[in-house]
Amino acid sequence: MTSIYQEVLGSKFNELHPQIQRRFGFSSKDGIAAIGKGVMAQVWRGRFYTVPFLYVGAWRNIMFPASGQNVPFSVENYAYCDGYGRETVTWIRTFHFPEKIRRFDATMIYSHQRNLIVDYLGSHQHLAVDIHLSVAENGGMQIRSGEQRFYEGKIGFRFPMLFSGYANVSEWYDDATEKFQIEVSVQNRIWGPLFGYRGSFDVEYVPVTEVPAGMKPWHEELRE
Image 1 (cartoon, rainbow, N blue to C red):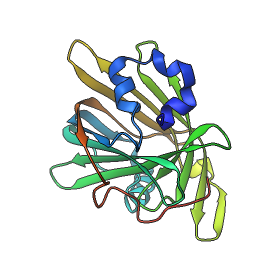
Image 2: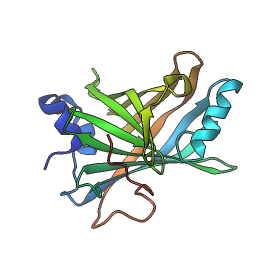
Image 3: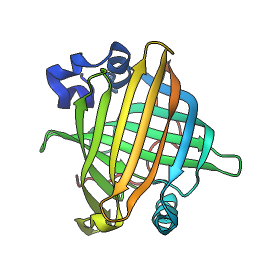
Image 4: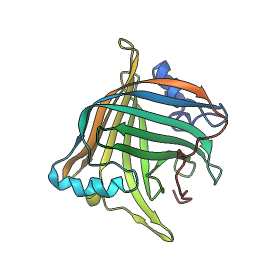
């Protein structure tokens, strides 16, 4: 079984740096997880009027209002089949600030209907975001977010981008330092920069038989 990222990129997946291929190339059938640990040189937030957006997001582990430098960081990627039989990959990002630990949770699935990744943000999959992948010139993975939809019970609607942001994520492998590098920026077209971080980390590939408690979302949403 190919990974959800291989499904989308097809032959272009082979243009990624070999370390990026390994990191994005496993599926639920491989019995491994990618555990990244490192330091974010900078975690930033937008101007004062963006703080309410971030506090609302922190309620369900979607962004947060904290900022700082040299913040210890981890990212945990587990591949599994969700309750609807969809190949799924966790993105559990943990930031260890001196005053509080913050999480930014997401689960990504491959949508066969639209041939793209859908990223469910937060602990309850309330926000579904279309993800567009491309290969950067340095062999890194370029991730850009698109349309967003909000789901709560029987309610579902296209989420107004006035109250959210578009994410641009660059992840690549630096041969000189032998570390993964990442840069994330979330911006609102009207309010400007909302949230972001940049730094580096190492990745360990560990054998797994099941996803540990606390990694999966509390609620799974069928609607993509």
